[in-house]
Length: 285
Image (cartoon, rainbow, N blue to C red; front, side):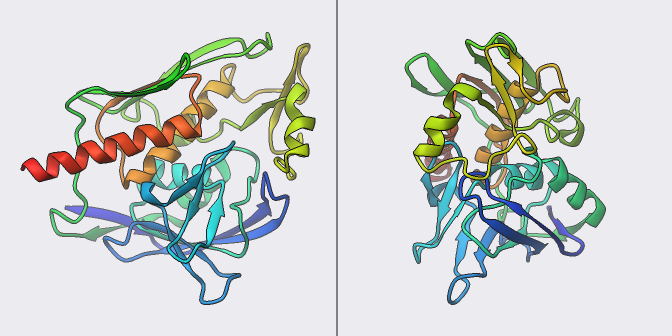
């Protein structure tokens, strides 16, 4: 059995979507079995925050993690999606602030840095990175929104969204990592927002760092900052978010993931349900 980590470190910096603060991120190799984890280098004793589902503390318009000391790190999903999508099992992520930078609003810059750095295999014990195959359907829902994991012979992500804005409308996309690379099909898709919600979100202390340079914005007449990278870029970005949130399980359990109008909250609820199912499966072995 093998895992992968980075050949060497890389560094990127930028503005956080919600905090509006400039932060610097160093992503470094980690030992086999350590998984992906964050280190808040700006805080005393540089506390560690594991990128695990148990560490999720908040899911309002992003996913936020907290360590045992109370240290938190926000908007982790794009970087984590890039790492898992590129096959990096173990990584130390040092951040000198409270939020991972948004960069261009997608995972493309992270993916390019990982690809340039490269990965190296790590020998591991067979049970140090247990795989998990979904054998029974798992569903979570809120109103007409839902997220599910269905038994499947291969991993697939299918997502649907539906917005009043005609430029977005109803979109569905199904992505198979075996058929299309994460780097080309999912990573370039940028975060998006609705112009009618911007002021309300800012009054709530959110999206302080959001601009037309790092997020697609749509109003009832169309996109304020075209062109799009894909005709269905919004729904592809939702798959990016789901992939990043599910990475908190350590790896993507083999399943067909199906989501409709879901959120980070539903993504995390699905991951928690899968984590519970995995725990039950281990107890019965």
